[in-house]
Image (tube, rainbow, N blue to C red; front, side, top):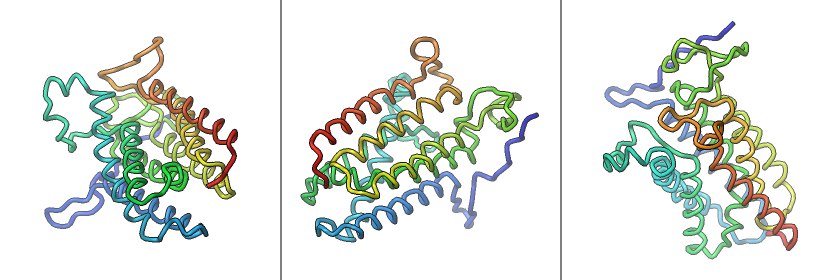
Length: 264
């Protein structure tokens, strides 16, 4: 038994010559939800360090970080050969190619800039936004699913499906696995954990551990990039290698946070 991939028009809205794609719409929804949640968290603080306008300003810098960092990360981690052969590929974003890890670096740089601009502590910023980010990641993976891209490995599980660009064999809908784990499950974990005062860095550290662990597991079901394949030990993917520093850094951050114990 296998499921047929639902034929969803990748264009969500037609406005004459203007076409709004589901993938872009998912990004827009994700950014909007993130802004709303961060603003809610800020409104609950009583220390007077945040204003309700700050989340909007921070979101602007983070969006730039996601787009620029995501593209640069994809080139650096996944497609350096193509870039060296044709450097202009970095500007052809319509051909696809965004990296979570590059986007994360971009967001961290945006948080660092915002910290210097406002006087807020760096981890005060990352601890505030970390619980809101997973939902945006979840919506992004739903966008991947609608596009029929980044599908999983061949499988005979009852919910496996045939993707239009994945050949005739049924595959894991790994985009939905990622949406469920890296998106909605991680959101619940972080939202509940951060509902009480925690030491500085602890929430950010848990985000790194949670995302890294979920991504490492899902990579066993996701088809490796065709031009990379398995990059280590005959089974490890680039995505898995990139999560290891995240998990180790997150574990160190939580350990250091609870050694110091002062909360934001």
